[in-house]
Length: 99
Image (cartoon, rainbow, N blue to C red):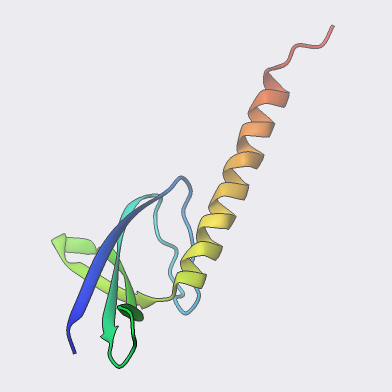
């Protein structure tokens, strides 16, 4: 079956964890590679997601594609966003002067 792929760029402001991995990934930009296959036998063109990978730059310039799911990535982004909002709130609270 023909496979199509897409690349999505994500940026994490804080270090993050992904389900299924014990390591903590550093903050930064990451590429997410998603592969889709064409579904046959339908009266319209449709694709099914086959795999999702997070592209991680490992030590010594080695690039790894780590299998993950969109749900796990969305959860990690939600935690990162929540952490970022808490940090912003803390900064704005501490920067106010009291008289």
